[in-house]
Amino acid sequence: MHTRILMLLIPVILYPSLLLGQLQRERVVQDTAVELTFMAPRNINLFTVEPLSKGELHYSIMHTFGEVNSGVRTLWGVDQGANVRFSFEYGFGDNISVGFGRSSMDKVYDVNTRITLLRQRTDGSVPVSVTAAPSVGINTSSFGFLNENYSFSDRLNFSLALPIARKFNSDFSLMIVPMAVHFNRTGPELNISDPEVNTYYSIGVGGRYKFASRTALSFQYIPPLTDAENLSNNIGIGIDIETGGHVFQMFFTTSRALNESYLIASDNGNFFDREFRFGFNINRLFRIR
Amino acid sequence: MKYSSLLLIALLFFFCSHIDSKAQSFMADDGYVEFISTAPLLEFKGKSDHLTGFIDLDENLIDFYIDLNTIDTGIQRRNRDMRSTYLNTDKFPFAEFTGKLLTSFDADNQQKQAVKTSGIFSINGVEREIEVEGTLEPQGDALKLEASWVILLEDFEIDRPRVLFYELAEEQTVNISILLKSND
Image 1 (cartoon, rainbow over the protein chains, first blue to last red):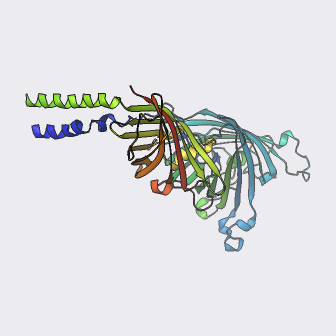
Image 2: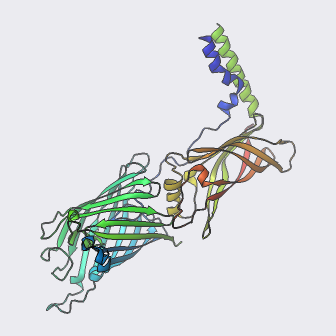
């Protein structure tokens, strides 16, 4: 017994500096907001809770092509033309940013803002991040062929997305996104599912799983919650690649839509009948000031 | 009885050694550290003024660490990427060096003196034995330390973009400067 005690004490007797010498490691930053819940302000098509910091400018260009079931003659939909959306979003503060974008489908320009309402904290005191993302869009298509042309007000649509996200660990993040959209005027001339319905709702789900330090699988599911014709599930799966300055997002999705309004109001193919499309987003962040 | 005596002797050694080590020990928690990345298209620095250091000349012990969450590269998004994607600061919040002086240092000589140290540097949970050259300069009761060395990210299993962009250099130059105050 005494021998064991003596052996335990030998290091203390001979090398007290081992115990006293090395500094106790203390973190300067004890509690911070959880960062990089998602790699970019969008996860496939859905807004995320990932904020811009003050002075950051985010540029993205998004594409979706034709359905892959059109086969090799159209290079699985690529020849069928793309819906393209480009957007700029600027961080006016660490919790508020304003964006501007244009989608080629129905030639819609939109202005949006993202306001961080809650940030998940590393100490667990706040379990989720919440962002409000309202936007207003204007359809700039030519409707001269109609008996009654669209007025300025007719062309407007309004949307609100409220992503609520949690980063469960360094690899896995999940969000639900309640969404509502209103079109001031609808008709068969618009690329929406039901020309009789002006207001659409949904609760989207999105997530990502990092399987390598800079690569993640991503998904989105936006079920139809509106009583409207021809509305079906929006399903998307993709891969995010962070390359040090850029984030590339490549995905397959059932919808051509790239902005909030059309995301829950437009047609979707049946994912399991190969009625999905290839798409990709390129995200780039600049520091302006 | 034997047990009590043994414990008393150990504590006496422990206590006396502690007192002695205070005589030539220096410490600070506001040192400067910078990591310089020089890639073909971009050079940037990550800086912090929270370098904590300790030198005990009697015990020949050098111990430094930095909370990596305090490093600022000048761009918030790059800071977030650095913390989450490259350095995994949730799991490994500190970069640390613990070692000893290989060369002699004369504390009574008020001149700046070149010194060489050897020890364990760890970052991202990976430890490597390194040698660092620098200078020590007594300044009154304090001790000014400046040192610089180069690390390879690959040696510390820090993954960086390779395929498309090279904005993060494989070689990182680490510079430190700290004025350590006497513990007396």
